[in-house]
Structures are given as C-alpha cells and as structure tokens.
Length: 167
Length: 202
Image 1 (tube, rainbow over the protein chains, first blue to last red):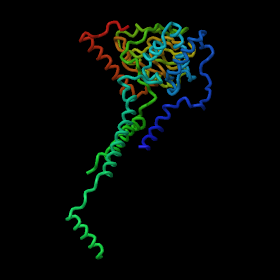
Image 2: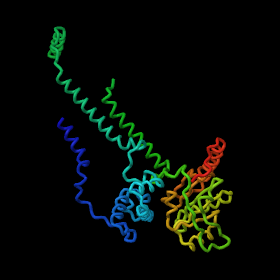
Image 3: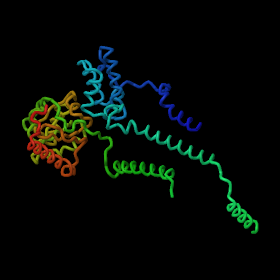
Image 4: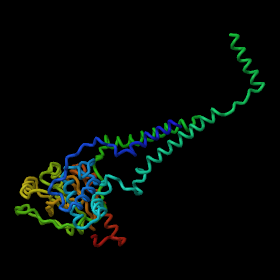
C-alpha cells in the first residue's frame, strides 16, 4: 500500500508544482513595437489571448511567441477585434471560426475531445483498480487457513517420502 | 487456462502497438502529412470580401478583381498564391492545365508586389478568371489560410467543399481535384432537386 501511495505522489507532483519552474528563461519578444496598443488594459488582454492561440505555421508556439508573418497578422487581428469592442471570448471565437479548435493551445472540453480529457484518468483508474484487486487476492491467498491433511493424504505423503529415501 | 490478469497487459500492449503501427504507416509509406490541419471552413459559405485587381496589369493579362459574389452559380477553384512562394511557382502549370479545361479558377494574390505578380503571370501564364489582391492578409485569414499555396473548391451555392494545403501535384488532378469538383457539382444539383439548396449563402 505504501508503494501505491508513493507512486501516486510521484505522478501527482507535476500537477501540483508547475509554479516551481524557476528556470524558465525570459523569452525574446516576437511582438513588434508597432503592434502594441496604446491602451495598456486592452494590450494586456491581447497578450493573454495571444498566449492561448496556436501559430498555425510553427504549430508548437503560440502566436505571442512566434515570428511567423501569420502569427503577426493574427496578433494584430486580435487587437483589432478588442478595439472593435469584442470580449476576450468573442475575439478567440472569431479566430476559431476560421481555423478550428486546433488553433487553441488548450483544447476545449466537448464531445469530440472527451477521450483526450477523460482517457488518461480512466486508464489510470483502471490501473489502480487492477493493482488493488491483485493485492487483495494475493493477501487472501496468503491469509487463507490451510486445512489439515486427511488420513489418506498423510499416507500418500509418507509413501512418497519413503520412496524418495529408498533411492 | 490463462487468467485475465495475464491476458490484459498483453492485450493492452497489442492494442497500443496496433494504433501506433497504423499511425506510423500512415505518416511513412502512407504519405500522410501530419502538419496539415483540417479546415474549419469546410461546408461553410465562402467569407465576404471584395478585392481590388492587380494594379497596372498589361492588357494581355488583365483580369478583373475578385469578390464573394463572383463564386455563385458554378463549381470553382480559389487559389491563394504569391510570386514569392516557391511551391506556387511549381504548382502553376497544373493551374494552367485546369484553366485550359475550362475550369473557373479565381486567384487571391497574397501580400505580393504588383510588379512581381505581373512578372510571375507573364512568365508562366494567367490561369485566373479574376484576381483579387490581399495586401493585409485579412481575406486569407477569413478563408482560414495558413500555408501557401492553398486551393479551395467552392460549390455553386458559394460553400467551401474542400481545402488543399500546399501545391497540387499533377497526379492529384485526376485522383483528387477533378473527382471532388464533380462531387461538389452533383451534391448541389441533388440539393436543388430536393429543394434544400441555399439560395443566398451569406
């Protein structure tokens, strides 16, 4: 049981401790000075949105990180949407309508992504259940009282032992 | 008799190996490009735009600008291209072949200099019925474009039916593009018969 708990703790550690990533270097900004909005509140919102949108050219960077032309165009587009009075959700939706859910670095929780979100948890639970069952059955097997030998069995054992010592 | 506890891990391994195997086959010998993203625009109406023609086009190449309404009434191709894009140059003869077969091809000239675009077309020919200039890249974003060239099949009701990322190879004409265009033509005809064809398509 202690082993199971230890394994659990190890697996949970990265979930609890993302704040401990002290070694993240300060990245060079892809954002160009001419893109930055005059209104600091609007600009802050734009930065947050940009960090959540995938650059479709590089695919593993957000548009906030990417130097690709399309990323720049999308950053400017996000800012234009905000200036036009869109909420954050509306600005994101505007991009998703054109590029699909793939543009979101954090996949949304919906029917088509159910396996993605639930799958690992289900497999983990199945594993836990399996290990628990196996442990329990083994414990029962060890703890089960051993019935004493019957007279016939005893005779059989004696005969076998006698046979062996004859050789 | 094998107990389930012995079979389960082997079964899980076999299932995973099968899934990974199929995937590996697809990206290897299967030739699937995993960097390609499915388009969110499929079966949606083409976006609204009204693009200017390329400036100072010589009379021999001259074609009008390009707007959403031009797409109505027939199955057409929309090609997003630029003179600075190498695969566009390689793809161009394929577009010329399609144009010779009488297929309407519309061009969106993406972030290009007019003189470069004109030089490109005068060297390689102009397959486009109409060309709209997209200098800001906004129209391309409205189409969901992320790589160049990209080609869309738009049906007679103005809905996007297929998106091709990257160049169209000559062998893909008969195996992919033309059958899909035929399919787009038939399904719209079918819709019209049952009376569900969208007249407007905003």
